[in-house]
Amino acid sequence: MAPIPTQREKRIVGTSLKMYFDLPSTLRYIDAVSQLSSAAEQANVDLFVIPDFVTLLSAKGKLQNTSIQLGAQDTYSEDKGAFTGEVSPLTLKQAGVNIVEIGHAERRRLFGETDQDVAKKAAAIVRNGMVPLVCIGEKSKSNIASQAVGLAVSECKPQITAALSQIPDDAEVILAYEPVWAIGAAEPAGADHVVTVTQNLRELVSGRKGRTRILYGGSAGPGTFDKLKDGVDGLFLGRFAHDVKNLETVIQEMSDGS
Ligand SMILES: O=C(CO)COP(=O)(O)O
Image (cartoon, rainbow, N blue to C red; front, side, top):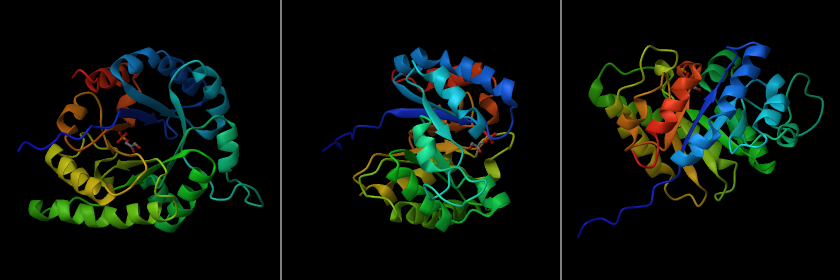
């Protein structure tokens, strides 16, 4: 008997600006992204954008009448208190943020963010009614092709388990699989690798009650999604979304019809 096809999740694409743009450029970028709202709706794709903290409030204003979701690049794990320099998840929620990115490879490498920090932040995000976007990925590319998938999955597994351990089973989560070696590269990781790893990761979370979408990130851009669609629900873009036309192309490539 033919297997019953499982209904797939609504696709989702977004971009983090990291710290690439200054204030005026970020505001111009958000204006341009706001014009893509109806394209995303027509394609039946969720669209999100993650600027820096300083621009969140202005960005919210610009996205007000659109279906585009606003994200933050990080959060602290406590809502209030003597935590100089940190940004509260409660304040993010009040500013109109829907999605909060945590555990990005750059935060882990440059700022020492650990799986335990990520877990506490995930709990804080859910507690404040937002969706954690948990970045996971293996640090280095294995030279032995036959071992690459196994090593990637075993490195990602504790990252996922830690983040999920502190949130209710029915909480929505987005996982962004970003092999660290593919971030800032010329090209994304190979499709076979990404599809096999993400299929394995999906099995790991298949028992969850909460919606759990899996994205790929790492030098993704136009042309990437089609190769990965058997493994992922969408893409998390970096540099190759700086030209908004590329983001528009990716949305079209992810359209339900394609
Ligand atoms: O880190 C990324 C998204 O979070 C990917 O960045 P790049 O696409 O610029 O490699």
